[in-house]
Length: 302
Image 1 (cartoon, rainbow, N blue to C red):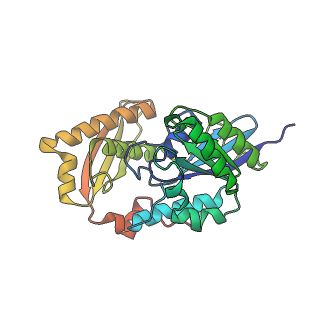
Image 2: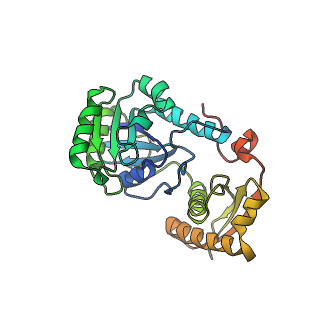
Image 3: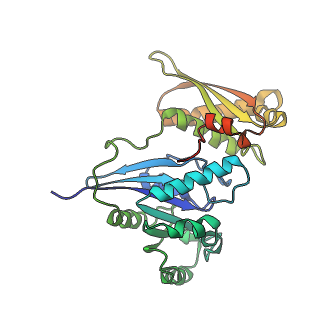
């Protein structure tokens, strides 16, 4: 009987390098929210790919940054724990924005923590479809010559290019191990978690400047009903009264638009109709408040 392999694979990279797009493509299902704004991913999110002979638990992580406040510190703690626990590390380099990898490979976490870990590391050169192929070939040779990576793979997460090569390379490196999760499980997160993330995605889409970064979504009530629509009550948390006014908008038009867009996407995700009630609350400096961060699920990583 052929052996079964299973392992954890952490996906790391700078903000907007395409980590969430990649994990969605690998799983062939939208699991993580996507935005052109940096720091879209705040938590580590597990996506589970199970096939006949292997199970890969991909961990999407927040973009690598130098933290400026407590929330960002917690985000970087999540990255570090994910990397240290991983059987394989995928490091994503955006060749469009950082062709030579100078921003990525000189990032503090990469230098001080990642390169000292024993887990095999695969460098993924993302968005190669936007670059000259001769230049990419030269870059692959250059990055391979550093001997920092087990393998260097050119990919395009958006165009599903070379994803099979990623899977095959990971399967070679993960250990023989029984399944960690049942066959039909795609993630270990709850529906409530993804509903909050969908609303946060719509905030990123509909608002600009500081408002999306000062916002968090808390699901206050989630009632599944046998008859009629499910009921979801969600609070959009902001730091200032001026931000609350922006979220609500003149005569409530902005929050109505946010609610309509959120409801539509939540129904597509849950595959059932819902009634969504959105409210806005002000919690000053919540991104720097340890108690508030614990309430929102950003507890200190262990």
